[in-house]
Image (tube, rainbow, N blue to C red; front, side, top):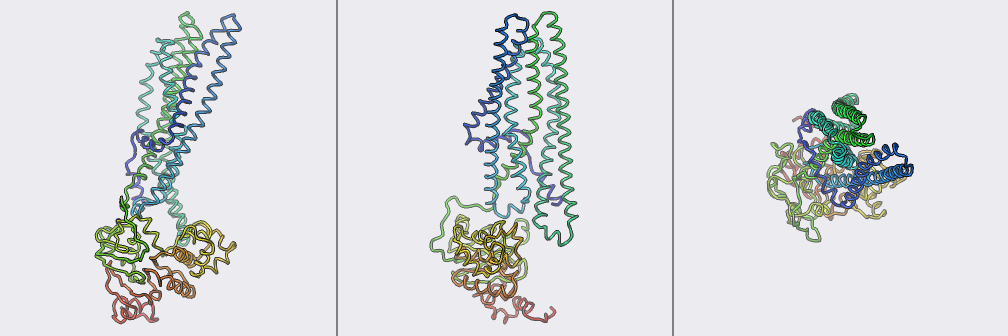
Length: 597
C-alpha cells in the first residue's frame, strides 16, 4: 500500500463520540430478552456488592458482643451474600459473553453480505485487505465491548452512585472529604481521554493498512518471487506494521499514565479519609464497624471510577470500530436494483443491444472506455470483439453484466433495459469465461459445479469432457475430488481456463461471454476447446473477446474496436481484404515476417 492509500485511510472521518455505539442497536434489538436478563443479573450483583459492607459492619461490631449465636448469624448472612454474588456474576458473564458473540456474528454476516453485493467501483476506493481487517479486527473490538466492557461499565456506574449514596448515609463528613478528590480525578480522565481516542483511531487505521498490504502481497506471491522483490515487500510490510506498533505503544503509554494517575489520586484520598476516620473511632464518634463499612464503600466507589476510566477508552475504540463497520453497511453503491424490477420474458432469447453508450471508469473519468457505442447482437449470433488493449472490448463484457452503469445510453437484453431488472436474476442467463479464471479453494468437482448449483456429478463430468478438462482432472490424485488449493495453485494456467470453460458449459445459459477464454491454452488444447466452444455457441448468443485472431475466424461477425469505438466490422475474409486495423493485426499474428510499419 502506498502513502496515498495510507493518507486516504487516515483521512476517513472517525467517531469522536461513544454515541456512535448506538449503531449497534439494530443488532441488539432481536435479543431483547437476553439483554434484559443480562441487565437483571448485573443489577443483582451490584445490589449484593452494596449490601456486603453492611454485613461486614455487623460482623466487625459483633466482635464486641458476647452473643455467639448472633455472631454466627452475621457470618452466615455474609456467606450467603457471597454465594449469591458468585452465582449472579457467573450468570452475568455467561449472558453478556454469549450476547457479544451472537451480535458480532450477526455483524460479520451483515457486513459480508453487503460488501459481496457491491459493484466493482466500490473496490476501486478501498482495498480488500482493509475490508477483511474491519470484519475481523473491528468486530473483535466490538465483541470485547459488548461481552465485557459495557457490562463492566454499567455495573460500575451502579456501584459508583449506589456507593456514593450509602457513603453519605454512613458518614456525611467523610463523604464530603472524598468528594473533594473528584475534580482531581476527572481532569486527567478528560485530558488524557481525548489523546487516547485519537491514538486509538490511528492505531486501528495502521492495523487495517498492515492487513491490506499483507493481503495484496500474498495474493501476488508468485509475481513477488518471480521479480525477487521479497525483501522490498517485506520492508514495506514491516514499515506499516512498525507504524501500527508505534501507534499502539503511544496508546498504551497514554492509557497507563491515565490509569496510574487516577489510581494514585483515588487511593491517596482514601488513605487521608481513613486517617481522619481512625481518629473519629479513637474519639468514640463512630464505631469500628461503621468505619470499615465506609472504607469498603469508598474502595468500591474508587474501584468503580478507576474501572470506568479504563472502560471509557475501550468504549471509544469500539465507537470507532462501530462507525467503520456501519460505514461499510451504509456504503452507497453506484449500481442499484430497481424497487419494482422487471423480469425477462421466458424463454430468454439472448438479444443484446447497446444504444449510444458512453462510459468512463470512475478511476479514469477523463478517458472514455466506450464513446457512443451502438451495437446489436441477434439471438444465437456469435460476435467477436477484437482490437488493441484498452480499446473497450472487456468493458462491454462488464457493462453487459451491469458491474457498472454507463454515463449515457441504454443497454438491453431482449429489449429490456438492464437498469429495470434485478441484477442477480438476469445474470442467471449469462455464462462467463474470464481472462483470469478464478479457481476456488475446494475440489475440482465443486469448482465446476459453481456454474450451476445442484448439478449432478455426471453433468459436471460431461461439462469437463466438453471443455477438454476431463483428462487432467482424472489424473489428479483424487480425480474430481482433488482439492485444488487457494486460487487453484495445483493447476496450470491452461488447466484453470478449461475448468472455467467447463463451469460456463455447465451453466447452460442463453448468453455466453468469452473474455480471452483460450489465451492460456496450448495449440492442441485450444483446438479441442475451440470445437467445444463452437458447439456450445451454436445455440447461444455469444460474445468473444480475443487477441488471438485464430479463435474468432469462424465468428458470424467480427467487430474491430479502437478508442472505445467500432472502426470496422464484417467476416474475417472481408476485414482482411479491407486492409485496415484488423488486417494489420492479422499480418502480425499469421505472417512469419512482420512488415515494418
